[in-house]
Length: 135
Image 1 (cartoon, rainbow, N blue to C red):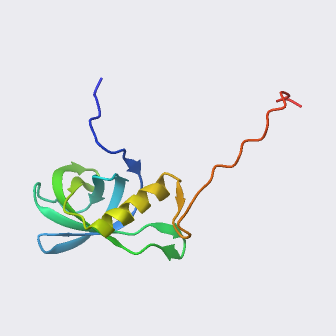
Image 2: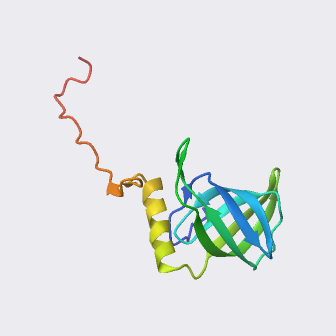
């Protein structure tokens, strides 16, 4: 059995992103996101060890997006896949306000917060069980 030693849980999320690496700019599609890094797929190979900046925005509805969140990272691995390259990055030197926004993204993905209002999402109280489930 393989043990997952990650510090932070990953959330599967597909977000269109823009990646800047070695002066080049290209599009990417995220696969997952955590407090410490992300995985994305791109048509371009990216060299392991280089710094990159990923700009990602959440889509709330057909016409509603968050502002793009710029995330500084270092490429940890790059693997060829059928639709391009899958790239894993670890975030580096994030500005405190960026960390705050990233945490907000993650709370939204976990269903803990309504990003538009900034308010926590309360669990609805479960209806009382009257014991007759097949009435």
